[in-house]
Amino acid sequence: MKRVWAVPVLLVLCGSVVATGPALQGSFGTAATALAICVLLALAHSPLLFPRSIGLAEAQRRSSADGRPVILWRPGCTYCLRMRIRLGRSAHRLHWVDIWRDPAGAAEVRAANDGNETVPTVLVSGRPHVNPDPAWVRAHLSPSA
Image (cartoon, rainbow, N blue to C red; front, side):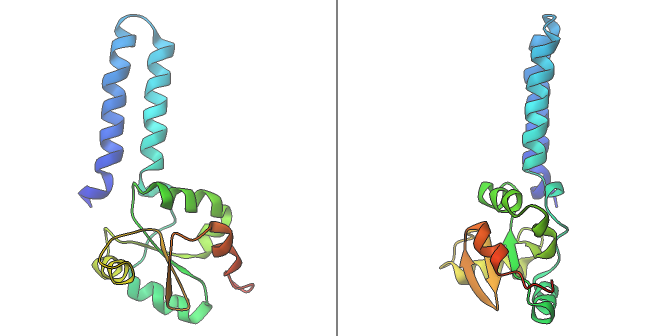
């Protein structure tokens, strides 16, 4: 749990430190801008931007029932962030597994990627696809999903 929030907390703390200098010199606009940029970066690297994660076993069970892909991801991954943003509203129709919270998900990613934790790894019909195009993932959503 701590590992998930380390980068966002560090970004907010750094933003606070950076904003302190201009604020003490009376440049509140610069201070506010620096802090806002760091807070936005922290949000982008936090799990808050992603749909709620479930365990791999539950995601696979749900996927076999409804045919929706499973996305194995981790906080702080720019490719996962790209996937989430480009999927838009469709992202909530997928099953998301945070590999930092689910050891089985991490093991699945390592098995699919020669021991590396390369994410996002998307499971479609049980087959892994490493960092696919978000349009391709969207196309694999079943119409009934």
